[in-house]
Amino acid sequence: MVTRHEGDLLAHDAKIALVVSRFNDFITRHLLDAAVDTHARHGGSDEHLTIVHVPGSFELPVTALRLAQTKKFDAIVCLGCVIRGATQHYDLVVDAAAKGVAQVGLQTGVPTIFGVITADTLEQAIERAGSKQGNQGAKAMLGAMEMANLFKRF
Ligand code: INI
Image (cartoon, rainbow, N blue to C red; front, top):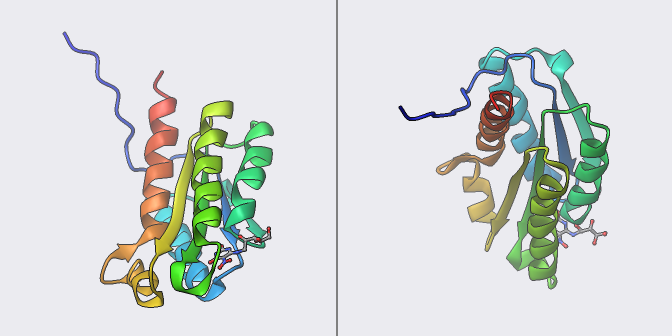
């Protein structure tokens, strides 16, 4: 018989931290709103959420690491938006954020979700923050709930 583990998409009582970048705030605030809304619509209560604001996506990993080290959270969601057209050092910021967030998960064992929009244009970013392509914040929260629930099973 096969042993199968799967996390459901209910909020349950998982403690989830959200780290959100202020850079491109006009986009990231929609990611944050959607993440909080998704949590509530999946049965979560606000007291299980902690929201931390950071200057930019570059600061997401170190902040997620600090939160993970407290051992108070079942999952961490990192939200940001990097737009190629708007920055010379797009690749540096994206690389640091993506590798850093992955490293936090691997180092601490706390599921750490990469909810950062990486877009070539402002239009693309808008599409991923609540229009044509859905909302990256909502997707990230679903990932956090699934992983938190999965890790409770083994
Ligand atoms: N931070 C972002 O989150 N998105 C960006 O598009 C961006 N640009 O364009 O540079 C950005 N830069 C700031 C960076 O994340 C740091 O906050 C800053 O370099 C200080 O460490």
